[in-house]
Amino acid sequence: MSAPELARAEQLARRRQQLVLRSGHLRGHVVHQLQAVQPALAWADRLQDAWIWLRANPLAVAGGVLAVAVWRPRRLAGLALRLWSGWRLLQRARSVGGTASRLL
Image (tube, rainbow, N blue to C red; front, side, top):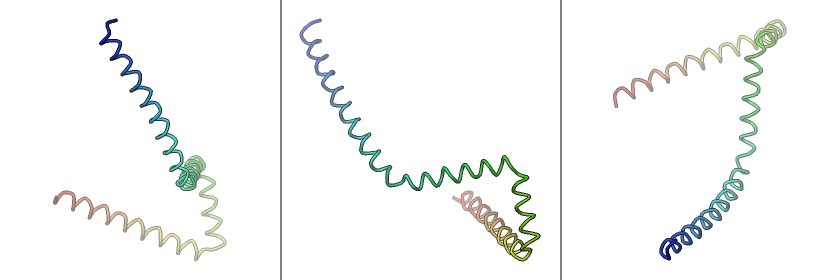
């Protein structure tokens, strides 16, 4: 290797070392910042696990709904009405959003 090539290789090695140190520092900073949102991420994981379980066990869900219908029919009717209203609101919002995006 010639002297200029050797100097260039040493310069690149120093630069690589600086970048590795900076990367380690940034990684530590990200870990520290993510600790603040860790509880929210844990809740999201629980919700996802619950959703997966519900989809895998539809008979358990149907049994729960049936139990509520037998013991608390008014409560079930109120819940059904709220769910239906929420569904309709979501459909309207999607419709308005689609119309607005076509206009722009």
